[in-house]
Image 1: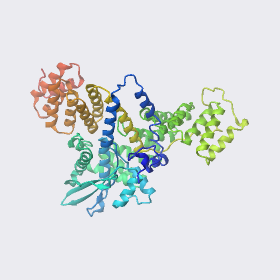
Image 2: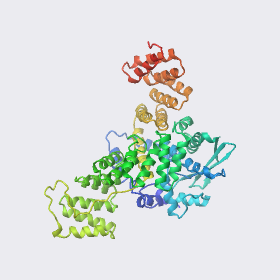
Image 3: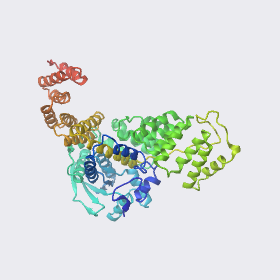
Image 4: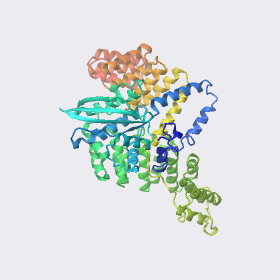
Amino acid sequence: MRSWMCHGRFRAGCRGCVYGRYVLSHTYNLAVRLKSSFLLPIVVLFAFSAAWPHAFAQEASASATHTEEKQGRLLLVLPFSNQTGQQNLDWIGEAAADILNRRLNSAGFLSIGRGDRLYALDRLGLPLNIEPSRATTIRIAENLDADDVIVGSYTLANGQLSMKAQILDLGTLTLSPPLTEQAELKSMMDTLNRLAWDEAHSMDPGYAVAAQTFLAADAPLRVDAFEAYIRGVIEESPANRVVHMREAVRLSPSFMPAWLALGRAYFANQDYEDAAETLGHLSKDDPNALEADFYRGLSFFYTANYMKAEDAFAFVSLRLPLPEVVNNQGVAASRRGRDAAPQFQQAIAADPRDEDYHFNLSVALRRRNDVPGAIREIDEALKLRPQDTEAQAFATQLKDPGSIKVNPDPGKAIVDDSLPLERIKHSYSETGFRQAAFEMEQLQAARLAALPPAQQAASLVKDGDQFLNRGLILEAEREYQSALKADPNSAAAHAGLAEVREHSRDTDAARQEAQKSLSLQPNVSAHLVLARLDLAGNQLAPAAGEVSAALKIDPNNANARGMKQAVEARGQQVP
């Protein structure tokens, strides 16, 4: 059963729950003791800020409770059961889990990654491709400390793919009524995205993001590219996985999850140069950029490109300063002859129970000629793992005065071949990272709750604009909808929603949102949405009028100037 220590919620650093122990022992401890690491100083900073309104306490508590109830539950999505009778369609089951995982994550829910699910199956001694009974499903979910499980199946009749999904609540052991979607097999992506929206709305009836936004989230992903990607995901051989993933990125070069998977496949095949190059295809603002740069850092490290390795780990730690990432940044810096003691001290402050961090700090202090400090840290490491033979040997060496070499420059690490090498963390916990990001998002929400409604909306619109510029329309709409909840009269939020609707090809809704925005306040963005819609409909005169209105607001706006050129290139003068 779920541990009482977790109160039904996943806590990655909780040693009382099975899933918490998994994150601690199997992965690289990514989300360990979030509250005692980088989150606690932030909470303390917020709590003692002079500008923090006293009235915030009740409001933030209510907001946090509401958010946790709606979207703070940990979800396990199992592959759907193939009931078509066609073995060559088995891949659709994993495809369903992949789409639902990604969409629900983007929607703000916490779902367990495929790698974590496979580890749980292996730990329970179950086949990785099992179609579990209800009792086995509950065992798997409890092993991962999930709150809910999404299960489903699919059939094919007369070219029509029918998909059914249900939600199993682990707290009450009740199964929700089935949600179903049906379409032609060639429209499978739309079917899965609609089902994902159905699930999000079922779990949170107040969820405001439009179904059309879900349908457009992966556009223009081809079904054959997605099939190649999924076949690569379920392929056991790293070499064969590379073949499938290369086909996926060839067919849909803009599908970034396939680039990430291809880079991971190269990494698993120990082809580190290709892994680093492939993972570099993900931009720094991609949702998977942290995972990509973690493995890029390892790839550079394993090819002795320590400067690039340090830079990659630094990029990750700057955004989520989790102890394992900070540790790796320090190890890479040490290989370059730099003093990495500060990084190892930071890692220990976040996770004092990890023996490797004490070992690494001991080595770093020895390089500084701080022998007493090095002895103190290696003794601490041995308390945590007494059977560590390398640490035992290093402790003996440190306590032998004849083995001590004097560092001519105590302010800089020295190269000493007699010293052991610092230890790097080798693996990535997708769920751990998402949990840490979720905790940070909760803190951000708490900060926003203390602001006046108009300022809340402005901040949320800014976040939405950033998501929109990255092509993440689902995440963008989520921010714009939140902005409108804070301030229903936010013209900028309506303008942002107009752009989302434009991206999802819902032209009527896009026009309505743009007009609503302009009724609240004249702005360039809404005028340009209307201009693009008119131009696409060959309504040149109205398009010219919208561009002219935008330029009156901001004569130097680059987007408005670009639209002016586009309209005039069609033979319509812009007044």
